Image 1 (cartoon, rainbow, N blue to C red):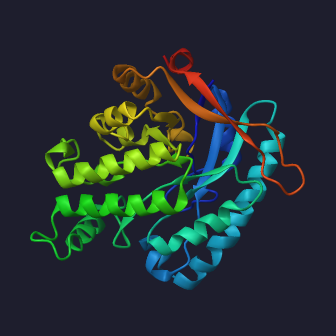
Image 2 (image 1 turned 90 degrees about the horizontal axis):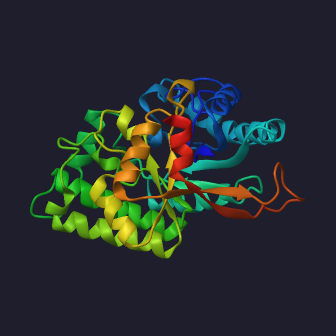
Length: 314
């Protein structure tokens, strides 16, 4: 019963992912996944939000993004039908919350009847990507903490990240919260105990409490390991606090191509076992495949014992 709730393809996220979506789905079946959440990135709509590889012809890049999302939903529905006997396909997308003005854009995309859920993620601070490269991370840091006694520090950057995440949680109420502590990826000290920063820790706890109150899940995201971090997202102290609140985890590889499907799943299972976690959560569509009329399909919450992942990935 292994699964992922977070995945991407080169077909619909060209530039930073690889492989056709159908080939990724076939591989997921071959490694033992019984459920997969397809979650391509949502479109962006302004030139200032394009990535460097999209800036050669920015207007053409922007013009391609909404139709690509539409094409993704069509293909996802086809794959859901075609592979329904082999794997339970959930259709979603990864939301961007570059600025609070993105909230209505996300909620409009979520209205599509084929969309089962979206992942609420934050990849930017002060409209600058914080997980793309070190230069952009430092740019975001330099813009942080305006009006504070020590602007431009990493502590202020973390505070601003978690404030934006709080706005995202408040406005979007996502079922799944993506890579909760992504901000540490390019940090000077990614494994630091953030509890030493009282302001940062207070914002983390505030956000966790809000997500728990909303009934959202945090994904334990194995991508942090393949990117060189010592622990998955979220790190241990945040994960322990989430468990104190009675929070539930889902499980994700955040794969960007065939080579990353189920990467470091065994290590991630061990991490959760060490935390005392016994089960992780996914969804089951009450109608599968397809939709009935023009209505969204109801979702059932399903607990999967970690022992099922251990059977598959050792």
